[in-house]
Image 1 (tube, rainbow, N blue to C red):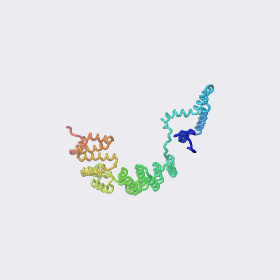
Image 2 (image 1 turned 180 degrees about the vertical axis):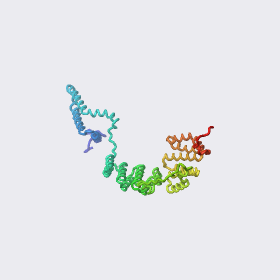
Image 3 (image 1 turned 90 degrees about the vertical axis):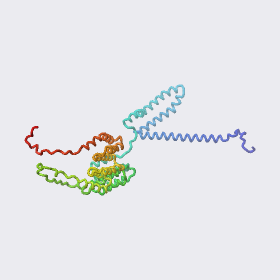
Image 4 (image 1 turned 135 degrees about the vertical axis):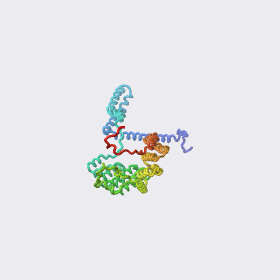
Length: 429
C-alpha cells in the first residue's frame, strides 16, 4: 500500500494490534484492585486499633507499645531478614538477634498475652467486658426526697429524664413527689397525662398510672369526680380488657363525699346502755342483731346493677340471694354465667365463681352430674393449674359432700326439765 503503514515491514503481525491496549487495561484493573484491597486492609486495621484504644484502660501506654513493636518489626524485616537469608557469619549473627527481638516482643506484650489467656475464665465471674446497657439512676433523687428536698429531687429526676424521656419509673416518681409530698395535684396530673400520651408504653403501666392518680384524687384531694374521670379513662383507652373491667368495678364502689371525708374527721363513738338484768332474762333472742332483709338487698343489687352492670361483687351477692332465699337456682346460674362468660375476666375470679356455682347447686339440691360438670369446667380451663387439682380432689369427694349436705338438717330436740341443775340430787337408776 503506497503511502500507508506496512505491518509486515515493521514486524507487527496481523490480529495483534489490540495487545498493547489489552495489556494496559489489565494493568489498570490490577492497580485499582490493589488499591481497593489496601483501603479495605487499612480500614480494618484502623477499626481494630480504634476499638483497642476504646477498650484499653491506658491508651497512651498502648500506643507506646505499638510504636516499639513497629520499630522491632521494621528492624527484623530490613536488617535481620537479609542476614538470615545470607550464608556465613550473617546467619550466625542474625539468629541470636532474632531471639533477642522475640524476647523483647514478649516483654512488651506479656500482660496482654496473659490477659488474653485468662479472660475467658475471668468472664465467668465478672460477666465479660461488654458495656452495660445504660439506664437511669434515681438513687440521688430518692435520697433528696427522704431528706425533704422535694424540688431538688424533681430537678434530679428531670435531668435523668432528659436522657431517658420515656422512662416509666422516673415519670411516676416525679408524679408521686408532686402529689404526695408537695400536694400539687394539678402538676401530678399533668405529669401522668404526658406519660399516657407517650407512645410505646405497656397497657398495664398506663392503667397503673391512672389508678394511682385516682387514689391521689381520693386520698389527698377528696375529689370523687376527678377520681371517676381517671378510672373512666382506663375504660376508654382499653375497652373490654381486664383493666377496663377492674376500673368499672371500682367506679361502682366509689363512696360518697361523706365517706371520703369520714377518715379525716374526728370519730364519735356512741355506746348505748345495755340491759342491766341480762342474766335474769328468759330469752335473749330480742338482743340479737336484726338480719338484713334479703328482698330489700336483692332490690338494691338490681338497682345498683342497672347503673353499674360490670360490678361483679353486687352480681355475685344477688346470685346468692336468688339461690338461698328465692330458691331460684336458674336465676342465680344466669347471674354467675354472665360474669364467667365475660371476656378478659381474671382466671382466679372465674374459678371462684365456678366453685360458688357448685356450692349453690349442692345447697339447692341439684343432681350429681350437674355439679360434676360445673367442677369439670375448672379442670378444662387449665388442667395443670393448682385450681384444677383442687377441683379434682373435690370431684373425688363430691358424693360425700352432697350426702353431708342432705343430712345436715336441724334436729329438733326433746323438751327437758328446765331447772334440773338446781336440784340437790338426782334419783339413782
